[in-house]
Image (tube, rainbow, N blue to C red; front, side):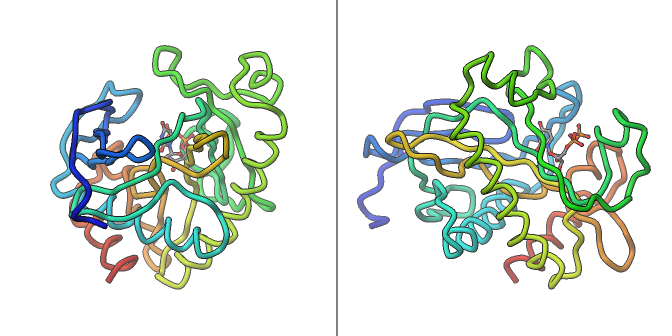
Length: 238
Ligand code: UDP
């Protein structure tokens, strides 16, 4: 199959990925960059080899989810930094699942970083850089016409199921899955999981030391950023 794939024109360039035509109208190629941004792109930098880590970690997690019955856009990893995926229309909602208090939740609600959230919570953010990705409710989703109520219900159910699958997967690798962000898309009208699942889009804490093994090391200038990404790759794909 790989022989038939020809990388075509650039369709879109985002903060961490480029998307190319794949010579087949139903498919695209995701290329993972080393560029890193935080705080709505106010902070910019490079994490060496991040693209390779995020591509391979995403592949492993998409395969795990597909095997468990969650439809994803993943088709095949083409190279260190490239993944063949189904073409989707991205739903403009960022879905965040939280198992522990961290980040914006701690700040917004004055909760203590690290406290367990039981049962886990699912939040929705409007994917809109100009507005700074604001937190939204299901009523806002309806008001903005971002997705039909039945689609929102499916997204919530899958987000919780994905969390149930990922928590033990990371636990077995000595990692606490603190929180993560998902994006979904429509492919021929069908809802599927899209984007990536990686140290850019998840918070992982080492079970033994409590140290961050994700983009928080970049956001907070904690150092050893590349080392942390490589360690995630080793534990997830090694
Ligand atoms: N997240 C993301 N992209 C975003 C915002 C958040 O991937 O644009 C991820 C983030 O890495 C974390 C989770 O979603 O794993 C929850 O992030 P939070 O709302 O706490 O925001 P932050 O503190 O990262 O700004």
